[in-house]
Image 1 (tube, rainbow, N blue to C red):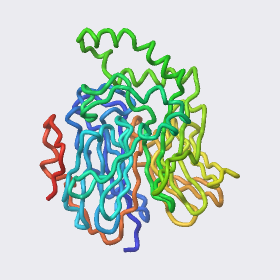
Image 2 (image 1 turned 135 degrees about the horizontal axis):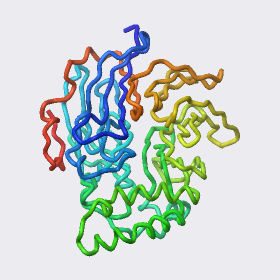
Image 3 (image 1 turned 90 degrees about the vertical axis):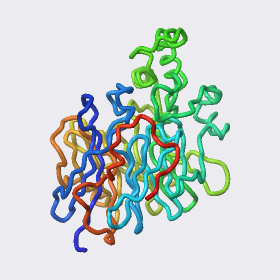
Image 4 (image 1 turned 180 degrees about the horizontal axis):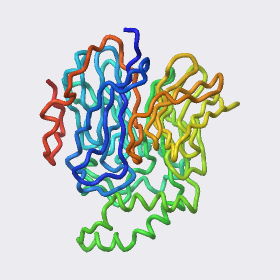
Length: 385
């Protein structure tokens, strides 16, 4: 095949109930146009989460290899074979507010921000491994989260009605393979002061919850929004964490003083590449931190998200307003807009993945009919065709 095809997911931040909240698009890089546009299957719990920033809406991470592609929404993973036939649908109670994915031969790594979890699921839905900062007291102390180790947990993070008042402590939103193990992006780690401000602001809602009176103000997502408000007055951080194949996790990159989450983290040769969403730029830095270079991404706002290698020292990144794809070359350095994906002012690119050449032509309807069922009881187990 003499064309590079991309699979691109998006999220529409502000949408009314019943409206499309995101898409998955097939894009021709050679022709710079959209070949197909599929609305994402909506979460059955969407009506219970009013969070305007993202909540349970939109398409999430995409990953694949020569055998399969996996596309995520907030609480499910859809598995497609080379013929674009949906051969699996994976879910689990820990998979609340799924972000990015990493496909490997024996399964798929998933980052789920509601549960603070990095999880690997086998293709039959079996849990192969789980990891959270809560399992590493030394890391929790370094991130000043030791006081949160004993916080309340949920038995199902997919349902916002069952979330504790405080959740998503590190906004785990990226996972990638590197020679030593896994690179994990902690997109937004609030300071201790920020969390205290959040707790004080949420006191009325906490009292109502204790009295058993559930209102919009008491919903967990509303409490989570307060964290971003609190961070306007105190520092929060983005942290890149190495989860090695052997030994304890350790911090390998950090950016303090952010007001919005950063996204994606890749190892490229002897560098780290990530989306500095806070400063509207893509960053490449030496693994040892000895140097750093940045390329700005335009937009109003850009909200830089989505990152895929394009060969050499080039990367594909996405943006909001407009929802667009950019070719970033760190050697030049330069940023070139490839195409605009849509005109909705609140639509933002989420995931970007290069489709392997061995994949054929996709069907008109991407999702299997069963995926459209509006059943507010997601399966705990996998469904594999």
